[in-house]
Length: 75
Image 1 (tube, rainbow, N blue to C red):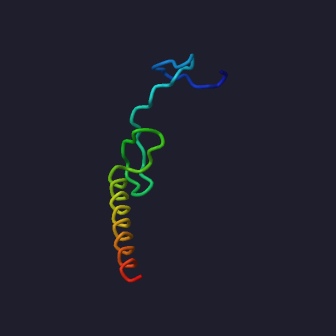
Image 2: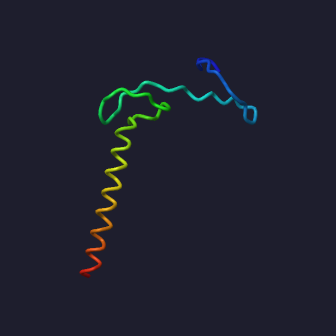
Image 3: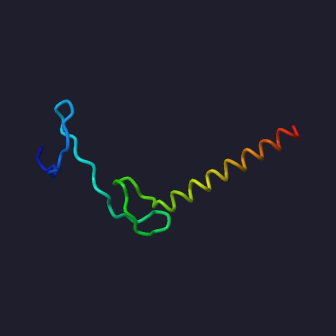
C-alpha cells in the first residue's frame, strides 16, 4: 500500500492486521487550554474539565427534575 506509514501490529483478525493502540499522547485541552496526557487521539478534554462537565450536566438534570415536579404540582 504505497505511502502508508509503517505501524506496529499486535494481532491479526480475519487476515487483516490490527494496529496497536497508541500510547498516551500529550494534548492541549480544548476547554482550559492546559496540557494533559490523552488516552488516545480523539481525547481532547482533560480529566478535570471532563469531571466539571459531568457535574454541570448532573446539576442541570437535577434542576430539570425539580422544575417538572413544581409544574406537575401546579398543573
